[in-house]
Each structure stands twice: as C-alpha cells, then as structure tokens.
Image 1 (cartoon, rainbow, N blue to C red):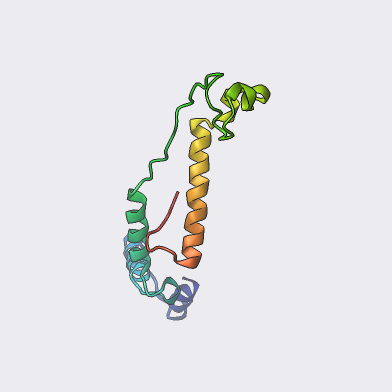
Image 2 (image 1 turned 90 degrees about the vertical axis):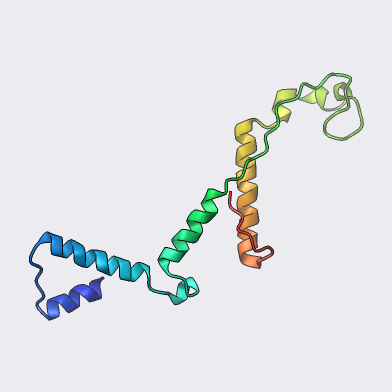
Length: 131
C-alpha cells in the first residue's frame, strides 16, 4: 500500500471526492484478494477464506458423559478389578473422579487441536482437524 501511495504522489494524482477514493480502494482490495500468492501455495486470499469458512461449517460434537453414580459394591471404574469401596472409593470423592461437561469440552478441544497440529506438520490424513 505504501508503494501505491508513493506512485500516486510521484505522479501528483489527486482524487476528486471521497466516492472516487472509495471506488479506487475497492478496486485495489479486489485485485489484492484475487491475486495468486506464492506463500499461499498459489491460492488467492479469497480462495483461502472460502476454504476456511467451509471447514468451519463442520462442527464437531464433543462427546459428553453424564456423571455416573458408582455404587460401593460396583467394580471400580479405574479398571483395577476391585470393588469401588476397596479401591478409589476409599481415597476420593466420586464426583471429583469424573470430568464436568465444561472440562470434557476443554479436553476434547485441546486433543483435537493437538491432532490438527500434528496432521498439518506430518500430513497424516487429508482432512483438516480443527477443534
């Protein structure tokens, strides 16, 4: 944009009114948004925007589990094979052992974010993974 302003100054170009300035800026913006750029792997900024919007339309439903009531004589959810009362039930509160829906959402957003980061670097699958 600075280069463009320098050119206009160099040739003493003067706009007649604000409408003409706005039309000029609209044309410059359209040209810039529709020019293929090497850094964008040949895509135009408009194409990249369309691709990003398309990816945002697909929302991921994060799985949430309702807190389960664990009976004292039920098998412990930690997988030890012991009864709950003889294992995790002794040392902790059952509600603290389960993620709230907010914590579960945060966990899955973080996990999908990490998967997406690795996928972008390594190209494991062709799909974009976004939280």
